[in-house]
Length: 131
Image (tube, rainbow, N blue to C red; front, side, top):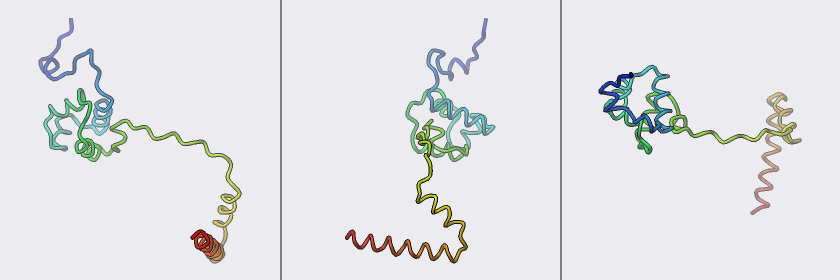
C-alpha cells in the first residue's frame, strides 16, 4: 500500500493529468540549475505554490514569468517554451561566387581592399541604375 502525503494530495497534480510541456521544461531547467522550488521561488519573487502551479498545471504562463524564469535559470525562453529551432536545409555545394569569396579571404589585406573597392563600385552603379 502506497502512502500519499498531505502535501502531495493538496499540491500535486492529479495522476491522470500529466504536467504541461512548459511545466516539464521548467522543472527540468530548475533541477538542472540545482534549485528547489522554494529557492527558485525566492529568486523569481513568487511563492513555492506558484512555482508548483507553473510546473504542474499552468497552460499559459505569463510572458513576464517566462522571461524572468529563463533569466534566473540561465536558459533561453525558447528552451522553456519548448520551441524547436527550424530545421536547417542541408547546404549544397558552394556557388562559384562563394568559392571566389573564400579565395579573396586568403589574399593579403591590401588586395582584399582592392577587391572590396571594386565590388562597392559595381554594386553602387547597379543601385543607381535600378533607380
